[in-house]
Amino acid sequence: MTDKLRVGIVGVGNNATTHHLTAYRLLPNVEVTACCATRPERAQAGAVRLGIPKAYTDVGAMIRDEKLDAVSICSTNDAHCQNTVDALHAGAHVLCEKPMALNGRQACAMCDTAEQSGRQAMVAYTYRFVPAAKMVQELIASGELGDLFSLQGTYVSAYLADLALPIEKAWKLQGGHGGGVLGDLGSHLIYLARWWCGEVVRACGVKQTIMPKRQLPDGTDLAVDVDDACGFWLEFASGLTGSFFVTKYATGRKNYQHIEVHGSKGAVAYNVERPGELQVCLGARAVADREWMTVKVPERFGNAGMVGRLEAYRCEQVRTFVNGIHDSRPLEPSFADGLVCQQVIDAVAVSTAAPAWVPIMRG
Image (cartoon, rainbow, N blue to C red):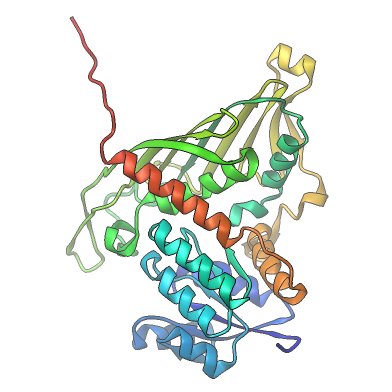
């Protein structure tokens, strides 16, 4: 590997271009030299639009021909496993978008391949790099909250709330491509909750398809066969119970991710839209008086602002990946983290197939 890391992008959609590509281009020791998409015309159009020199439809060929050191896997979810395996076999380090795979079996195969390849492998649970999220982890680990009682997590947006707006990313509403909000949004909450609170031992949930039919830009109907709203509950090894809700039908919300944790000594509330601050109820007096206050997250947890038009924590994710490759040190979130999160998602999905709804008896 030369001093400048040669990187390829698998996928030319919004996440690949707005987040990964933009972040790579902010780093002086990285050169994005190629992109890859399933269809030749899409790959070529993406390369032209993004100013990337080469376009491919085969991940392995792209890595070998361009002598790439690393790739970001930003394809549809159903292609994560094969693209990752192909990239690792071709000798590239991998940053894979979440959810890591369609199921635990695929995620396990990806972990095994990464271990056998000796390459670095990381899953893009982006919100680990939010300064406020890092501070929550430290508060809990240090015992500031005492014994944990409960956790409530919400991740919602209004992405689907305008019913008159055509659906641009049809695959996110199709099960065959690995769509659905449990994997898309729920995976982020599961990762953060595990990082903060430890291992999950049991799960249950319910899911819903709010709108079974939407319209595509060409006016044709799209049959929705995935969850676009999901509520689930996780029990942790410590005995803590967490409740979670995710949907993209949250009218008025942008990228609203809120998690509140309560313990015997205090409580904390995190909101990703306020990455440089936390709401806390800490100390005997505050707990007794039920008083909350806003605290600023210290700079040692990272930059809570913007780097150009990109949130600093998104840049930090890519910087961590690149630095880990250069320094040959283990990366987090790891593929092992991704595997466990996928196993939790699988457990929630199984439970939603036969939810134990109990009718309300009246009269």
